[in-house]
Image (cartoon, rainbow, N blue to C red):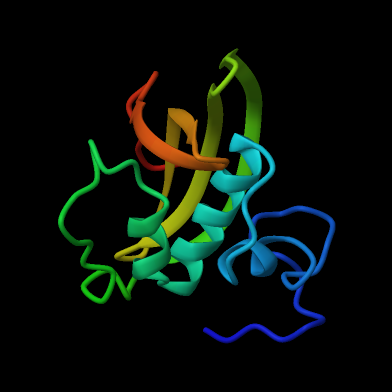
Length: 135
């Protein structure tokens, strides 16, 4: 999937991709954990595996992702439920991501933990407050 300057941002923000997640994908530091969460959602939409790995905390990062195997997944939308600082350099972002795979609509509800190190936010891990499933 390609993005041009006028493409609405995939994360649902009321900006273009270039003004929103595109800048972060190009190397600009995300100003908040929520901005990083949004950019990571957009990276899943665009299958930007190197970006996803680079923004995953080294202590919990998997060696690789297999987004090519997930190319049948269609991302449908992101809803940020809350963004809360949990310390000077840590935060929690609660979100619901909707997607379709195998002809079935799914939703993933996650409480994600983020930390900031050397001026950059990183995804650490997440909890699922309710079982995700068909909607």
